[in-house]
Length: 116
Image 1 (cartoon, one colour):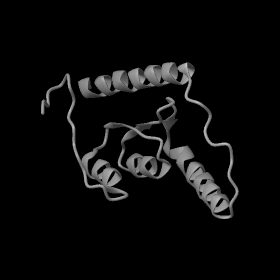
Image 2: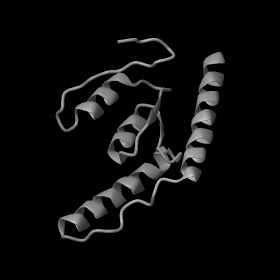
Image 3: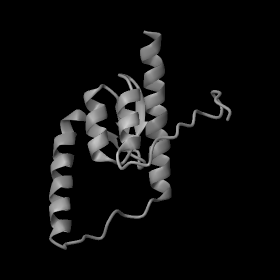
């Protein structure tokens, strides 16, 4: 398998429930950028100083993560009671554009930090 800067690096983890999250948590470091919609993983990564972006281009921030975790908990409780919402809205072209812009901004800022 090719592992150069153009093709990326593929890592295969166990099929256990949290294996991918554990790998990510153990192999990221301060200043890295991660893309996830998992609020729990985002919370852990933020605590390590990792920049976290959702697939829709929303940057998770330390000041907002506690509220997001509490909402996730309330939603899980409602689902256990049999209450189900509509789910997330469809992924749109606007989401793709927002993600591209925010990801580019994070990468640009990351490059600037490395030059300092």
